Amino acid sequence: MANPRYRSPNQYSKIRTQNKNEMLEDYVETISELIILKGEARNADLAKHFGVSQATINKNIKRLVALNLVKTEPYRSIFLTDEGQNLANSSKSKHEIVLNFLIKLGVSNKVAEEDSEGIEHHVSPETLSFMKKFIQNK
Image (tube, rainbow, N blue to C red; front, top):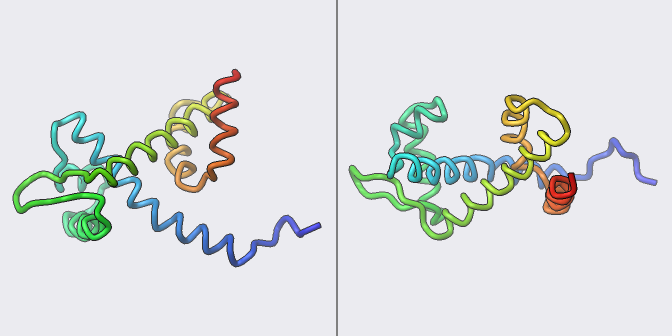
């Protein structure tokens, strides 16, 4: 039987990849929400939401453009590509499943919201499936 405390190099690689994708998922999900709530997503809105500088937002938006997740034009709003919208929808769905799972366990809404924000990026499809079944059966 394997030592339960031992982590294989593959596990660390997976965690590093998840950490890199975390920013992408957070940005596209927030851009999608801003478009729904305000009709547009602007750099200033993202800077305020994430509590970071405009320079940080600009750097991350360039990364999202390079990955074909968003489109931008000078002095215009930020737009999600189809790929970006799909990622936003997937991220939102994972977030809602994890949030509802934690609430069903009895975690307070405030703490469940805070915790689900981190967990959603690291939960496996298998675990997410079991969380979804648990929610539906309660």
